[in-house]
Length: 209
Image (cartoon, rainbow, N blue to C red; front, side, top):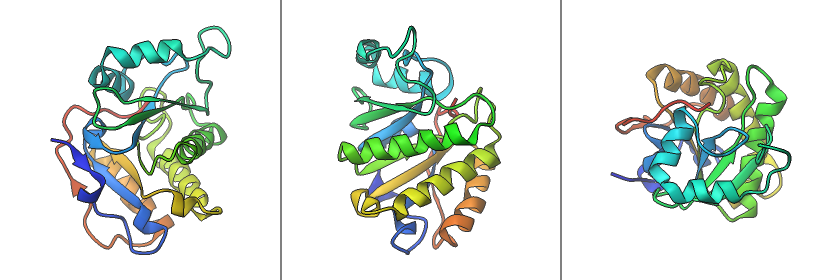
């Protein structure tokens, strides 16, 4: 079962809050313009959400990633940057790969979110689903990582014509605990939630790197 943006409920009713969504479920089932992959610098797959996305997208994704130019040996996407590929067997049209920091480095994590959002705008991607970057094996504390994710997104939406350039930014979580953290901080940054979050079967999705 695929999930479309119009099946989800926006966080609030203000011009900015209505562009933000919280989704507890499997990001590989989202039928959106792009999902974000918490990749490693090689971009050739790994554990967690990275492996799940590569498995769901199929071998063609690996082949395209392998063709991405290396900026230095074994590095196709440096930490804090983002790269765009097709979605292949995913319901999402595209994948935006970003490499989060190992440990608590807020400037690098902020760069991940900003790079993904800017790349989406440049490529006319109007619906984008984030995983929780760096909160898995990269061990960024979920509360602090969520603060960076939401504050960066809010600033981006407030800049220039960015709010008009996108229809929906989805924050995808796997566990009840992570969902609670996002709800609390979404309320801080975007005001109270006007409806309950859509809770779709989480499937086999995993936390981001």
